Image 1 (cartoon, rainbow, N blue to C red):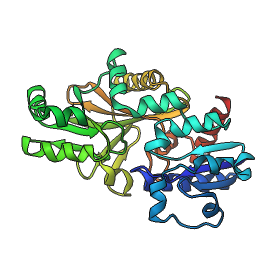
Image 2: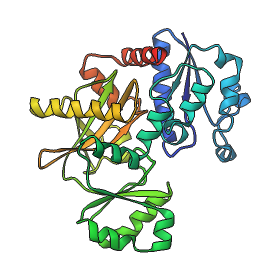
Image 3: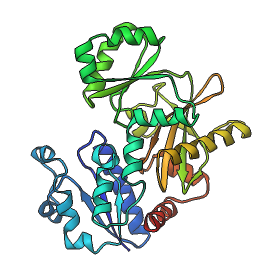
Length: 329
């Protein structure tokens, strides 16, 4: 099959998307597919001539994406593999363009991507369907500036430590773990650099877990032991900065419960095909769900491929299953 891989883009997760896209393209080619790789910020002529992006291209965003998708080489492809992370690649915008233009593509559609990317909507749905999630509050930039009482509200609601993070970012971008009042303002400013909204969340002491979903079934649970004590951007994407236990050493009853909840979370957030639930297993034995990733990483050290491998599924076969699900949508 001729497959187009979309990678790069302009989000805060651009570098990871480039790695995911290259890893996907390489494996698809090894499995005898014809592959076209597109960095979505590049105009068509630069793509054809393999010219690297210049700084001014980032100002144009991905406005040329429709032009790229309209060219004859792409139109003749049988499948689009969206390897964009964060921003329009993961919030439903690119999925909407692909749907409108009639392409077959991987992963969740507009609704699933948009819901999973919005931590507020995800939290509300978790609570509605009795999926444990840490205590939280939501603030927007206007409220913070006009009211000026966000610090007071946080201190009235939470005990330290707490987590402050942007509402619409992934890969722990803009996230801070706050241990005392002095750290609040810097953490708020950091989160607001990325979004106009933020979430304040109770920090759950315990174990870092993730559960990959493939075709409405949970793969083996992965426990993550990061070198920094928090699974931050560096620990996620730097080889050797985290230890992974697959499957996680959790008793069978709790394992089953976590996997069942992960599948429920996947479905209620309207995700499709594959995804990844991130959670903390608290010292109280309760699994607290943090978020669902509708377009999880596919780099050489990413978690969905690790979970698939533990289930006897090679990376090539994983991509094959994802593509098959996209075609059957």
